[in-house]
Length: 494
Image (cartoon, rainbow, N blue to C red):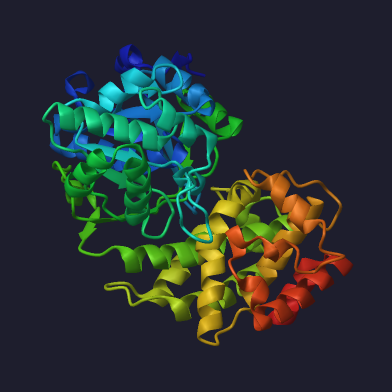
């Protein structure tokens, strides 16, 4: 067994004989991009494309400075600072092949909770051309049913009173853009990489809503100068496990505190509108298009919604991972029925995409036995995901008299999941959701009021007033409470 070497910049000279490492000059990189929300997905996706570009074309001005705004970002910050921004990307293929590489585009990492001024200065620096975001659906601070900015958020109220000491992405963006404007610098691009339909438009609307309330003159400058391209991002990236850390130690003799695992598939579609230049990502496979909306709708309504279909139903049945769901023929058939009969009919035409082929690829990707994406990760923050991924599909099918039964069973199961937090074998389910308490309070009233859960208008809009939906939902939720054998109901529908 090889002696174990800690992953950091000075040890690369020894590590490079064991595993592929960056061949470009990391010391010569400048941070043309600042990224808020450095998690596994960013490191497997945007940072992967950036590493590829740096490796092949040596563009030194497009390094990445990571930003964490929350106390919860401290652990990843500390690990990556100790490793000089280096980490291992472990790509797991369905046939068992594993490809590992040390990634080097992250050249700095700042914590907003420790030093807000340093983060503002970094974003306001002339080198910064793009500020990108993976802050999750819940980070955009809007009400799901209306899309309106939540001005009642205490952190937002704090920022109106003390703009020099921001806490949210909006306070940091406006403070740094103000500094750029006052210094005569061009605006940076704000590039959302989150799973939200029209993510750039949402970022634009939320930033402007905040800025108009805080500084109307600055808001006019942002409206005029800042670009917010819509993007569609895709790569399944499960939570890193101790087994992944042990694999690197045992196979390569490398001590990496937080590697990233992912599937081989990757896609990024971006609207080509930038305020202040951009990397030539098209050289490494990124698609730049005039309108990304059909692509993102396809992905959100098929991949992301499909994940939630498997996740919620799988959690109640007792499956622990997505690939375990896909070994179960009932789940495979049900997923495909949902995609074919409910999701596909409400999609727009997508140029250059074979929709049946795309759905086939999703089945294959979900089935990858080496990814083992946990059901709990997929179900996390469902209150932020389902309104955009699934409930919107129900609403559109109601409007055009389409099928709603497959998606509605998921909503009924979500109610039971939120109420009982146990699977059909009485084993506890760990729920991770910012709205968990509210979801539970609404769901536990179901036996006395079958519509209590869907009366949450911030999530479900007016579905509780739709006679057709209410009939289907009420029947399903009552059956689940009587007998939690969710697989039986799935089999009856397929």
